[in-house]
Amino acid sequence: MRLSSFARQGQELDADGRELKGFTPIFALSVKSVLSVYSSTHLYTFFILAIFLFTACRNRPQLLQAEKSAIYEHAALATPHPICTQVGKQILAEGGNAIDAAVAVQFAMAVVYPRAGNLGGGGFMVYRSNGGAVDALDFREKAPAAANRDMYLDENGDVISNLSTYGHLAAGVPGTVAGIDAMYKKYGSLPWKKLVQPAIDLARNGFPITQTEIDRQLSKREEIARINEATPFLNDYQEGDLFIQPELAATLERIRDQGKGGFYTGETADLIEKEMQSGGGLITKEDLKKYEVSWRKPIYCTYRDYEVYAMSPPSSGGIALCQMLSIMEPYPLSEMGFQSTGSGHITIEAMRRAYEDRAEYLGDSDFFPVPIDSLLDSTYLAQRMEDFEVSTATRSQPSEDALIKESFETTHISIVDSMGNALAITTTLNGNYGSKVIVDGAGFFLNNEMDDFSAKPGVPNMFGLVGAEANAIAPGKRMLSSMTPTIITKDDGLFLVLGAPGGSTIITAVLQVFTNVADYNMPLDSAIRAPRFHHQWLPDSVLVEPMAFDSITRWRLNNIGHGLKSVGRMAVIKAVQRLPNGQLHAAGDKRNADDDVGGF
Image (cartoon, rainbow, N blue to C red):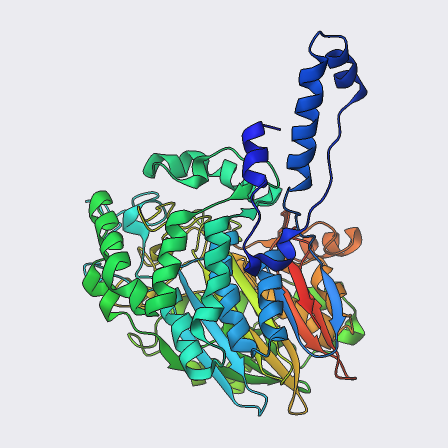
C-alpha cells in the first residue's frame, strides 16, 4: 500500500463519525520482506519504517461490515450502505422519527453512495403514520423549460444514440433536495441542522471507501474523465482509503444553513447553471427556482388479506404492482408452489399485461389524463386475462430494438421508528453516476433522467422500456419511473415496508418479495434472497436469475412459449417487516454487497 494512503487513513474522523473511528492493528510483513530488508545494510531504516507503518495501520479507519438480516424490538431500517445505516440508527436512537432518520440517511447517501445516492436526482416516498394515515410525495425530476419533444432526434426523426443518457443534455431539473426539505417540514421533529451535519462531516473528513465503490468508479472512470476534471472520482484508491469531497461538503453546508434555498438559489444554483452552459445543457437558475414537489394520493389496492399502498404516477410502480396482484389473486399460488410451472406462468402473464398498459397509458398525470381508476378496475383486469391460456404463453408484439439492460443506480431505504411510523423512499440518478456530469465547484453528479421520457414513441430507452404519447417530453413535465416504494398493511396494522433499485425490474422484484412472504410463507430474508424472474412485455422474453426455476420447470416454461434468458441479478430489495409478536425484521439484499440493516 502507498505511504500516501497511510497518511490519508491516519486522519481521525469527526465525532459525528462515531462508530467509524475504530482502530484496527493490521500491520503485517511477509517473512520474505523481512529477510530481504535484514540482509541489507539498512537495518536501522527498516525498523524506523516498520514503526511508521505500524502506527499508520493502527489509525486506519475500520470498514463497517454489512449486516443483511436482523430482528429488532423497537425500530429498524434497511439502507444501501453500512455508514448510512449507522447515521440513521443514531438519529432513531436519539429520539428522531422515521422522517428524521430518512433526512439524515438521504444526505449521507449522497456522500458515501455517490453512484446512486444523490443531490442531483429525484425520487418518491410513501409514508404511513402510526395512526394509519398514508401519504405519498413526488419529488421526481422535471424537464427543463427549454426542453422539447424532439430534442433527442436527428434530422431524419431518429433517436440520436446516448444523447439522452450521457452528458449535460441528459439532465432533468433535480428534485431530491426539495423532496427532503418537504418531507421534513411536514413530518420532521429534530433540528434540521442536526440531520444534515453527519453528511457534511463524512464529506469534509472523509470515510473509508469500500471495494464495491472503488470497482464501480473504475468501471466508469473513462466516461467521467471525458466530461470532468480535478474530481476525487478520478483518483486511485485502495479499500479503506479515506474518500474526501470538500466541494460536496460546502454544498451540504449551504443546504444545512439555508434549507432548500441553499440548493435551488444562490451559489449552488449559480454553479449548476454555469455547468449547464459549459456543456450545452438546458437547466437554468429559473428552472431550479421554480421546481416544486407534489404531495399525491397513493395508489391503493388489496390482495387477499393485505392492503397495499404504493406510489402514484409519474411512478408506474403502484399501478403496475396492483394490476399484477389483482390478476394473480384468483389463482391458488401457494397450492401451486413457489416457482412451479403453474405459478410461474400466471405471474409472467400478469407481468406482461401490466407492462403493456404501462407503455400505453402511464406518464405524468399533471400533463396526461392517466386512467388510474380504469386501469385498476377489477372488470377491466379480468378482461385483460380473457386471452390467457393455461398451456400457451401469450405473444407480445415483437421488437428487434427493445433490449433489457440492468441498472442498479437507484437506491432505496425502508424505516420503521419506535413510534410505529414507517416510510419507503426511493431516489435515483437513473444511470450509474447519472449523466456522469459533476457540477464543477459543487461536487455532485447530475441525473440522466431525461432518458426516462419517450424520446420517440415506441422506441425503447436504456432499460428496454417503450412509451407512448403519455410519456412524451414536454417542458416542466416529470418523466415516467419504475420506482416502487411500497407499504403493506394487514388487519389495519403495519406489515411490510419495501422497495428497490433496479430499473425496470424494480416492480417485479417488489411483487415477488411480497408474494414470497404472503403466498409462500417465507421469512423476509429468504423472500429477498430467493431467485427472481422478470417480464416487461417488450422484448418478449423472461429474464431469470441463476437458480430461478428448476431445470424441469425451465424446460416446461420454454416449451409453452416463454423464452427464458439468464441474467446475473435483478433489483436489490431493502425491507422491514413487522412480525406477529411486534418485533421488526429488517433485511437487505445479497445482490448488493453494501446493503445493510440496523436498529434497536
